[in-house]
Image (cartoon, rainbow, N blue to C red; front, side):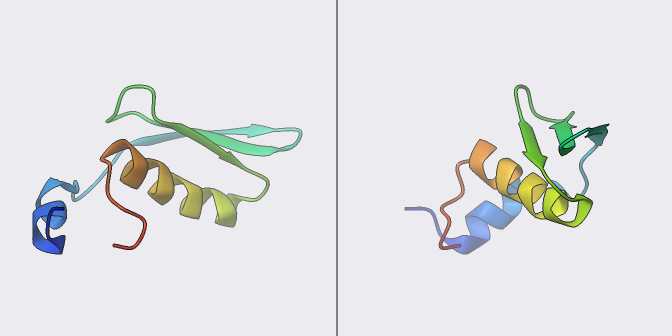
Length: 64
């Protein structure tokens, strides 16, 4: 398994996110990564879900 420092190197300093409001909450597309989408009921929750989507896309383990 990679060390924490190796994962920090692959994390972008900034990402571009396209956010859409729906009748049930929000959904977002991380424009920097293909097929990287997420959704949430509130905007605050969406921020957390975007981070989770990026970590999942980059295959960063949850424990890190």
